Figure 1 (tube, one colour):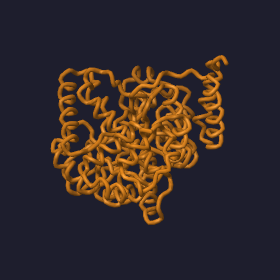
Figure 2 (figure 1 turned 90 degrees about the horizontal axis):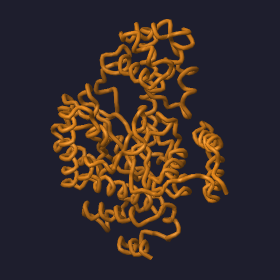
Figure 3 (figure 1 turned 135 degrees about the horizontal axis):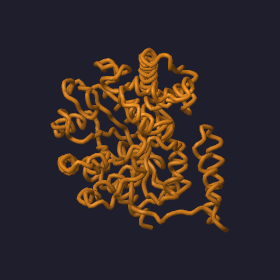
Figure 4 (figure 1 turned 60 degrees about the horizontal axis):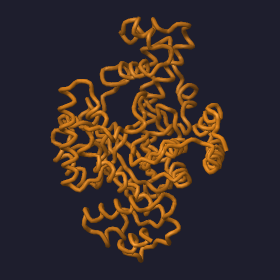
Length: 449
């Protein structure tokens, strides 16, 4: 069978990003059939990993749904892919199901801003916000949340909704006569009522376009930016959206409100939610330059004492830099934090985010700068996938009582799940008849058969 035309392939992939889950499901079924027929061009599988991809359930700059991300991995030959969304677990079941059908090693996670009182006076991975920490959970196996911790997840959504609505009030007052209505202009941009600042920005850009035939002068005035620069960015460019967010919604902007101890939840209930779901609390590293991250050993040991068992890194912002001095400094810090993770027994969860225009679909794993840490990145991805696959198939994930009984040593446990991730093809775990009567060696033997 000949390949689909570019127009036909674009139409299929557009439906994979539709807000309606039934449309996405039908498009995936059609895509699977076309793949079997050889009608869809694909690239050879490569040992690369992006375990930090936001979906449209928070914000994906390229409009990807969980299903379309799995499809992207299959077509591009990405061996390991993982999703992360702010404050919600809506992507988990859809993404993992799609990955199993498409033959992709998949994992899923959540990202939340929390308050860390022990570092209340130090900035960590949220610049300009002392005491505020981006924290993650990775390796979820289901969107189902135990009843005992559902209130924690509900609280995350309520807090985010309150922050967004209050920000809209402040920005509306400043941009008047350009205003947006949260219900009418923002929520339709999301599939499940979980907007982010980036959705607010899109709504404001479109509101200005409705208000003015040529909104360049308006934005030049309100953003205090030369008119020629704004004109070059219109009508709805990524550069304009990034500028609006930076000028109006980040620190120093009219929409920004400096957080205090009550703005975000404590890390303890978030870790309770993550572990109750059988997932892995995961620390997150920015670039090592903030006051708190200069004390990274202290910070990681604190987070580990509270349950963290992995470390998230966004590699591109530590080496892919134009300024030679900045690049040298941040690359050195990247090597140092990876070495510290090795010493502490923290597997790595790496990726590109995909929630800002211009971010890569996949890190450049062949870059010479990443050669000293590439194996750590790949092993970490296999670890998270191995945990996910065993947890999903038989409840034998890293946090299980089975794992604690058979593999009490952290490094031995890390090594086991990494080996599982390397040996277990996607979608095959259910056929292995796994159960808690097996030993780790029994399971590895099954994977060798």
